[in-house]
Image (tube, rainbow, N blue to C red; front, side, top):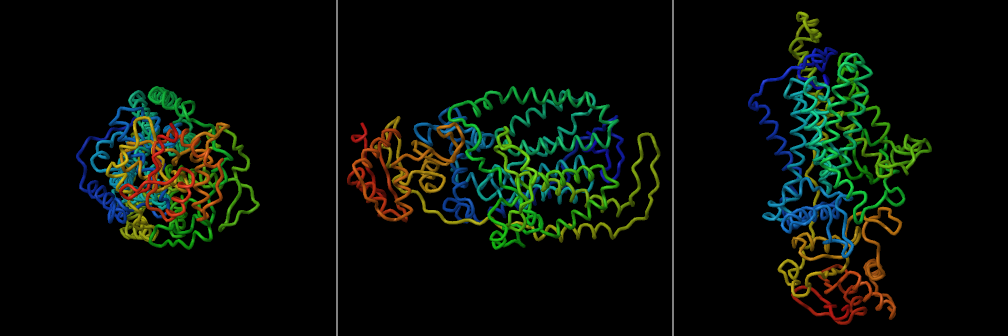
Length: 618
């Protein structure tokens, strides 16, 4: 598509490449490119700085359970490779039913190829290393897209790439959700979509696009969906503004799209079937959990919590929602000025404007929220049934991530326009076969520093802070040293107390991750089906796990009956348990009393209490 062709001047409406696309000669990376990539890497290291202070003993302060889940995922990738098991499913969590990894955020496109490093370094180091690398890689591919296909100024591409890789919404998700910062393939996908109309290259472009889409499915399907929706809006906006050019390339575009879709479907048909019809798959989320999460209008002009200008206090007003925009008022003001200056001359700017408007409105959700208050004004999602496929799983506020991407592109266009004006005014680019026009305005050297200064003023308050981290107790020596091995024969499970869950089981979930998942555990942190086939968080509570959680919460041993003891044995049989293990815990005393009352006296082995239940459960 000419929108991304290097011969198209994005500051004007000139489009010489619509008929004869040009090919840029291959060349070695310029010094500016290396400096840009180096800066992104350093910024990625800086963002993860608090983890590196004690990488084995710290997790995210904001989403510690998600952090532990992704450590567990790196261990899952290594376990699958080491044991040559199907990575789409695991029985090492939620024993005996297991977990459908395709139906969960599994990051298989990352954890499998990095399995050797995980085996060497461990999942904790691998998590921190990958998180910073993913941020830098996303900024790097965004820089490549902008510098090679949209703008000529490397400084402009650097600013845009930095925002696309380290925007406030992306940094927010970096707190325990590395799948939402793993966006390094998305700029490549966008470029290939917009080049599908190139004559004579539809097979190659289609094959490359299909391979990229297939791989992205194993990284983050939700971000792929958002990218597809954004590309659809871009193509439609281009078609409205360039109908003749669109008709000329429509056949080639559709042919390339068909090749891409066919290849992607061929490569992912079985995993997608497994996701929706394999064991432990589900249909939608119980109660439409995410459907009501819309973006607060005040959030757009608020500084995000994890930026230099941000403060946790703002969350008390707007609420503990995802911070997918949170641009701050200087960037919003600059974006409006940039659009006002560029939209008349630049096709790319007009398309960016359409993206901003469409996805800002779409992110509002079913009801308009303003400064933490849900108004009675209906939003766009109030007219959409939450029973529709895909819609039932979507979180409206995450559509604002497309707005963030559009703002990043707009920043690059604005900086590039300032650089162009400083060089030669805003002379219109010549049409194919026409002589170059004389500049319509004299050089204005002051425009470049002024434009760059405006961008700096808007972006500096959004410079990310190092992600906040908190200490976490190490797992028991009994676990890490392999003291459990004599108690867990093949086919049996180790039952940690408390049993891992979305709320109560952060430390004990890490026991599995930090031992390479060598023993299966009941419960866990995942989405699986309930009795109606709807998705729910975690394993359905059994009577004994519910009793453990209620005792933890109250800190008081409840009155127990023979029925409680009978049910405990039945639950242990269901879990195929061979040993119950209680390590150091704030509620260790009352939990030991509870399990002792249910199963009898424990043994003290190393630094844990254990109940060998093999004779009890048979």
